[in-house]
Image 1 (cartoon, rainbow, N blue to C red):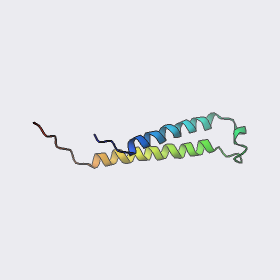
Image 2: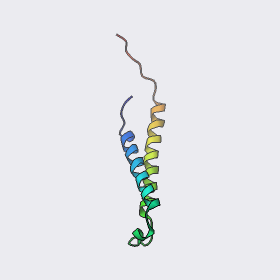
Image 3: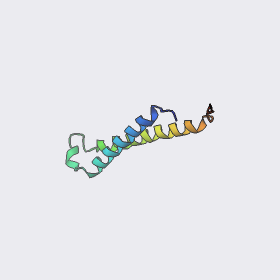
Image 4: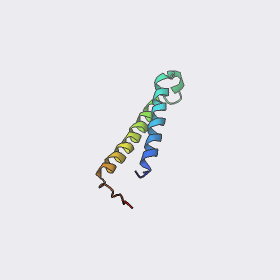
Length: 74
C-alpha cells in the first residue's frame, strides 16, 4: 500500500473539524458576541470535517480504481 498525502491530510482535517464541532456545540453563546452571534467554530468545524472526509473518500475511490500490482517471486 502506497502512502498518499490525502490520507494523513484527510485524517487531520476530520479530527480537527470534529474537535471544533464539539467545542462549538458545547460552548456558551456569550463567546460569540465578537462574531455577531455566529458560531464560527461549529460552522468551520463542519466544513473542515466534510473536507477531510472528502479527501479520504477520494483516496479510497482512486485506490479502488488502480489495477492490482504484480508481486515478483524470487
